[in-house]
Amino acid sequence: MKLPSKISRTSSSIAKATAVLAACASPLQAASSADAKALSMALDDEYRAEATYDAVLGSFPGARPFINIIEAERRHADRVKTEMDRVGIAYAKTNPYLGTLKAPASVLKACQQGIVAEEENIALYDRLLPSVTDGQIRATLTALQSASRERHLPAFQRCVARGGAMGGGRGRAE
Image (tube, rainbow, N blue to C red; front, top):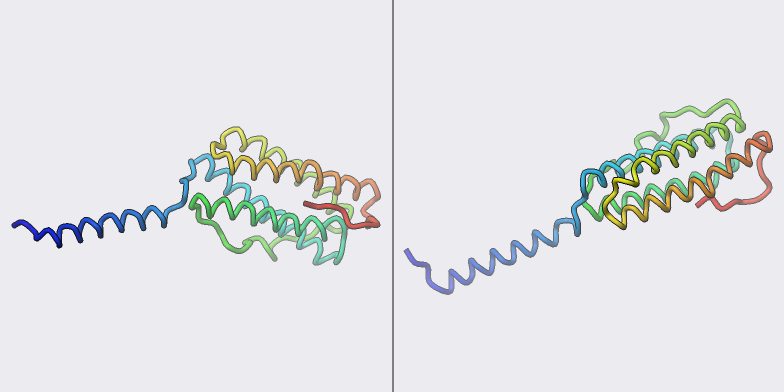
């Protein structure tokens, strides 16, 4: 049975509209499996860092450099989530590690652990970046690695050099 032309045109229009809506609802660019893995590992690392520094601040309120770096870690997690949203990767909206980690016995020990954590973070990005194919994801992860290398790691090294005593000024933690 042949459909009247008006119905046929309407069906065709509905099919086209559905295709346009489906394209709009999907991410602009799907992530490769390597990109998805890199983003997931980066977010997990940022969440762990935030939770660790939160535990330190719970035991040593206002301790530097933690008071500055925790804010940077939150911004870093937000940057990773923005990329995950862009390419359609699901993630935990809230940090699952908050409240689950214990602080070291002193600010000095916490700063020593901060050095190790930032060195591990830098090494993580060294492993992940070669396989990242999306340029925007690569730029984001490179910027996060740079913050660890150029700001966070030196802040923890200064903390250890002064024996865990608080520094005198507000550093740039980003």
